[in-house]
Image (cartoon, rainbow, N blue to C red; front, top):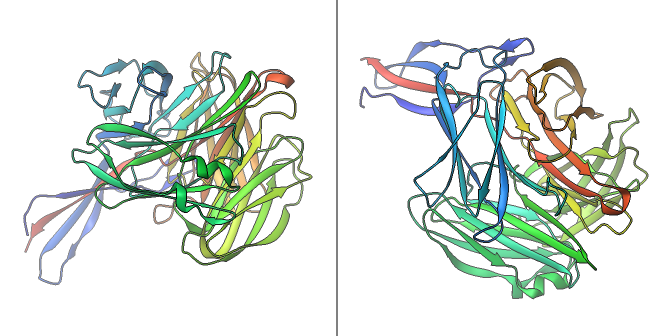
Length: 466
């Protein structure tokens, strides 16, 4: 065994009043008598991928944010952030300070957003378009690539167009298989096999027309030759108005799925369920109110090999959290239109992963504020929320989040927000998302942002003696 250290990314415990980490762990002895010592330190570089704007010239705002110094006292002072086209070696520098946020307009894609040195820990990025009020409001959290993704998306109808966006930020080409399932079962005519995604590239695939002839579509993307980032650009039109959403998988299939920021319009949200394991699932759905009401529970059955859309009615407020639990692994997402009037815009809210020690995002470029919704997958989680406005003023509040309700916190226009909670074995049991709405009743625009765990600390293990 080499004496060279082997690094791997980990998350560390976070206390409500500040982060707690271990600088050195006691050496351990392997079965062959070698002594290994482990140290932890802040990550020194991070790279996040965004699909970018539609087509070669589609414009999108890429925003980046850095966690407040009070949450990241271990970060070094020096460091920077940049955004670049994946095919370009010429990055656009971002003017970003610790605890701040910035936005940069980019065209085309895919996009890579990077942070180094002291800016790497507690770094988050998202892409947002439509903040100018001239087009549908669309947002997507920039994240890492996956080998497999299940993405609930689309509605039956000729006015709907779903475009799968595949990004390969790796140095080797990838081959992807695409399957589509629906309420009627597998849509054989929409399957695509062995789709090539060259290295450092983006490939856009319009889902075959057959997919639009079915309700409850879920797109399954699988790559065995390298991880890719998969998103679906879901577009709709109604007369002269248009709607659009860019959605993806953020939480892997599991027996519990939490959609923390499900949009509600006219007291309703629709939940789409699928059981990827190829067998049916009995699912308990709970709508967790942000208004202090008791949860609304419902038990449904997802048939084997099929998907299911469930309408949750009689809801108060503009957003709820949805928890889906089953003995089988499931996928869940929620959707709602922006308004019941002439607006064609709509939003998809995907299940959110555990935020780990911390997660954050910025609303720069959105043209509106939003509702942050926190949901717990443990009986009670103590969360710390830091909201920083565009002028640099921060407010901190401590919030108790219980598993039978959701907590809503308003985030002003152009503000950034960071959430932290204590962790155990890397998990905080806290999930977070934001619903953004803007416009008049007849021209409402809506989208959601899912918060994912920010890069934080790394653990390095090295041979110290035999």
